[in-house]
Amino acid sequence: MNRFILFGISSLFWVSCAKPWKASASQKSSAAKTHILNVNEQEWTHLSEDIMLFSQLERLNIQNNALKELPEFINEVKQLKRVNVADNYLTALPETLGDLEMIERLNISNNQFSSLPKAILKLPNLEVLDIRNNKLSTLPQELSDLKQLNAIYIGGNNFTEEQRNIFRKWLPYTKIILRSNKRK
View 1 (spheres, helix red, strand yellow):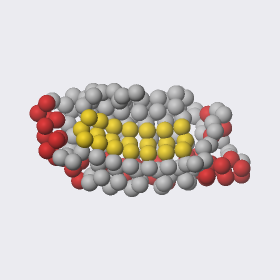
View 2: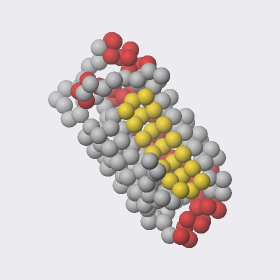
View 3: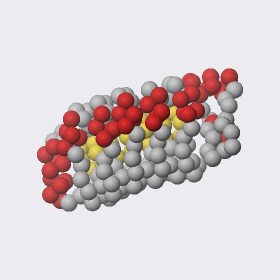
View 4: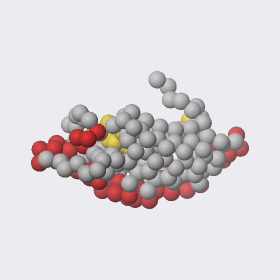
């Protein structure tokens, strides 16, 4: 698998810059061949449209940044299978995320979600959903429509024991993990 090496934020995306980054032909070619992009602990506040240069991107990890939203154009990165936006300041996800039918794993833990984003319910191949440590107090029964879902991390939210029992009835073949931190 190809990896795109990040030498600095300014080399890929622009964040609060006066003018947008213009990729050279070789940078565009490298981006187009990239399968995994890890941008952790960079204090990014948003993603620019340059993310669309990563046409073969399968894994996007932008954990532990300062994102307050994901852009609507995220659906242009059509090959995404794994998305990790944990440890940001997200309160919603764009509806267009639901267009990314190949997503198998989605980690939105440690954000500010008070309700489960509806876009998640449109991901037919979702296998693992991590929603730990948000402000959730309920989940929609439509989660049971996600037939590939085999694990959901729900710890660190405001679910009662009664609600957790209901979730187990809705999701009889899904492992419901209550702990708020994954094992290391």
